[in-house]
Amino acid sequence: TLNPQILTVLDHHYQELAIDGKDVIEGLSKKQKTLPPKYFYDDRGSLLFEEICDLPEYYPTRTEAWILQQYADEIAEITNCCELIELGSGSSTKTQLLLDAYQKIADNCRYLPIDVSGGILKTSVLQLQEKYPDIAIHGLLGTYDQALVHLESNYLQSRMLFFLGSSLGNFNPEECDRFLNQISRTLQSGDYFLLGIDLQKPKDILEAAYNDSQCVTAAFNLNMLSHLNWRFQGDFDISLFKHQAIYNEVENQIEMYLHCQKSHWVTLEALDLKVFFEGGESILTEISRKFNLTKMSQQLESKGLKTIKTCTDEKGWFGLILCQV
Ligand code: AVJ
Image (cartoon, rainbow, N blue to C red; front, side, top):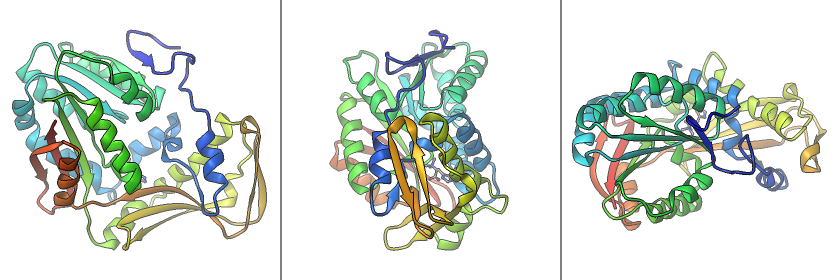
């Protein structure tokens, strides 16, 4: 059950997060079947993602954390006290590096973590409230779209919206463009946007990061079908699908697939949907685009988000861009 002190559900008709599943019907009706990455993150999926972040092959999280560690104080000094809003906060583990810095400069900060996964959001808000008594922390349970609509109304305190972990990489170029427009519309003049992006690098490093030797990424990928089973009363047989991740060097993106091993029907009762899967066909569950820091900075600029500072690690594997409207 929800405690309104801790969490607000962004769709007021529901206790749990509202997801209508239209995107599932649409994705599974295409020739190349697709499913949206937000379905990775039920409570189990969010825990599996936490495990991924600790894998030796999965460099993004620890690289971004290293950059945040180096630059958090400087970022806080530039933006000064503002309302900190995070899209896709997950466990907020890396965010603590920022909260530490903001706690030093201000006594009336606010932090609003936003996530689709209620379990991990509630747990992390409770832990953070204990650890940061001087920062007002309130979780918002919702999708990016719900969150951005909710945040749109006029407000007084200046804001820093942040979007870390290269979650932007899940959007194809058109979706990315639309999303950045939305961000720019949501923010007011003087506000900040902090973006973390994974950068282009050799294929073998990338493929290892998404095909880990302990098969946690495989479990994470397959868990999407289990999530659809409970959410939409489905009968996906997880044993009939195999995980694969490949790096597409033309598009500069990791593509994660679930390969169907044998022809069969799948029903999703709550969506009134019956889908035939051919043996050998696949579902594309995620793209994870790898970016160029300069080009991203230019794209942000074209949306009215002017780069103030870019930060990267010694290998140039991951980048942070701080921009201002
Ligand atoms: C959270 C979307 C940034 O693309 O690297 C990790 C998700 N998928 N391993 C990524 C993910 C497989 C992750 N993002």
